[in-house]
Image 1 (cartoon, rainbow, N blue to C red):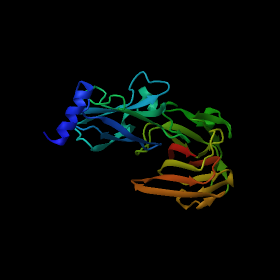
Image 2 (image 1 turned 30 degrees about the vertical axis):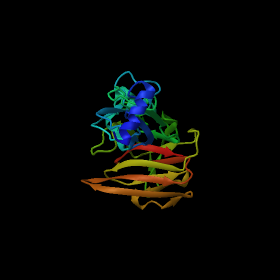
Image 3 (image 1 turned 135 degrees about the horizontal axis):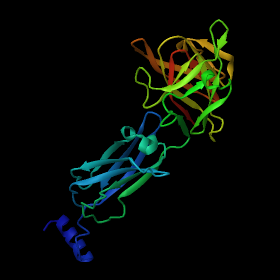
Image 4 (image 1 turned 180 degrees about the horizontal axis):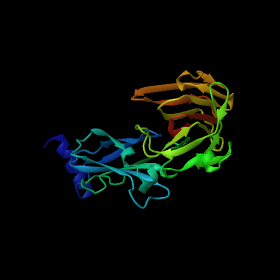
Length: 306
């Protein structure tokens, strides 16, 4: 009898069972990335026992508050086996699971990972199969999903005066503002919730038609040091102001906006599309408000980060 078999036999005799000669599946680490474009978790599962583990499942459960009545988000992995002393890294992408039934994942606050939830593997320790990690705080996003409804109009046709707060989501307040021409004149037209003519984010977007929208981050409860905005530009020019500067606004092509406004860096990255371009605006620095709008200009996923 070799040493390994002797060790297991001693364990068997001491415990009156096979508990000493068994796999032990442990969730070692859980890491979560959760923002406007990424909603995923990664976990490392190890077999710390002294026998190989056969087939088992791993559940990634998105814990919610309040809990969704429909489409509760869960990602499952089927692991064919895990040798003793070995580990495996699994990834769970929750973004494709976003739906009206789970409020587009807005209520998720924690990811819980469970190894062998069906007890398919007899382990030496059944009490170390779970580990959780919180969804990172210090982020708030306005993505117009599931409300307001497609077709909702703001601005002059809706009777909203310039400066009126017309929508609030995740603590971000959105108000309608005057649009400025490049020659110094201006107008005040409309913004509408709609599906864009080209892919932009997911779900609803908001179109600005000769109107500006101001996003106020001052009530979020944390200092904002970065703001990201996805946009679709299908013609005309744009306006932008950060923390009220420049006054009233910069008017022109967004890609030619100043690289720094009010001490905040401004970075615009675009991709050409038939008839226009899509892109991302990123602000880095202390941001309290962002004013932005265009003529044939759609916005989605306005996200503020601590």
